[in-house]
Image (cartoon, rainbow, N blue to C red; front, side, top):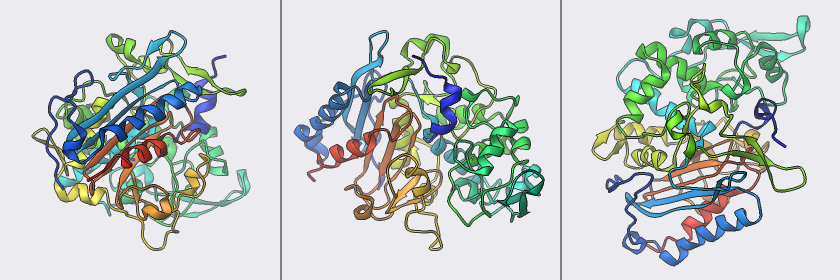
Length: 439
């Protein structure tokens, strides 16, 4: 049985020291070095393969691509299982994945590029550039003619970058989320948007009130998609064109974009969801996927597809404090700023629990939020042996990356199972990576 992407996605979309440059990093040919040369154990790294193969054997995920790099050197890069179970096609290192919310850190980098050029301050209200946001309201209760609201304080660019804007997502169980659905405000092109472009989408979004006063709560939502529209207004280019010219092109991310072109469809993975009686069932077939054509909306919160090899280049750019292979995308201090915890002491100790609790992960102790990605504030209470300050994010179909500046470590694990959090794939990947550190 093939389930409807349009029906499932609103509930499941959620689905983060300067190193040396890589040598020959491509999806098909990566120069692997001896892990011991950068303080890791070859024998212990093999446990990553064992862990992923166990999930595959138990029919929990179709396959996976995993990668670990330390001090700018790739020490582990493996593909296991299948990218398409129905057709029996193997997972390959250059398989193309739906990134969903793993698009968000890329959007954050785009905003910070324009910030570095002096186009705006992060304290600027978004209404200065998108005037439709000038008279926002905050939902207080009621519905229809009896709905109660109050005037919203101005939403800043910084609040959009940190999910403290008061915007939410259509898939949450709240009166505001219901209003998004009624107004046709989508979170993904898979839901069949009626809007022709981000301008129309943004102008309809503001007809729905906020869930909270800007700056008072962390609420996962449509903020990154608004920022994609901001990029268009500031740069004079479409969001996709800006990403291509300022990030994807310079970093040689050849397989990353908002859809999969015809000559690459054979590398595109199928997407799955848990079956009611165990195992998996097909959710999005590459042969009929909406990702086969350019989308109406280039959504900064959920729209990208790409390979592990491509995303490694972006992640290593962050690990290198803004530079990759001789190309500088961002300044050193900007990356340090991005990957710091931006939530003030007024926020609770587990601000992301509203999201991770919904995903079945319980309360998210020891984790704050930076610029479009999570930041570990206390590894002990977070429950994983990562470093304080580890920056990461993931996508709805179980794709994840992280950057650990203290250990000069980059990790990625990509599969295609929606929703993320069905199984602790990223947690297992991090445990099996960090236990391999010996120096």
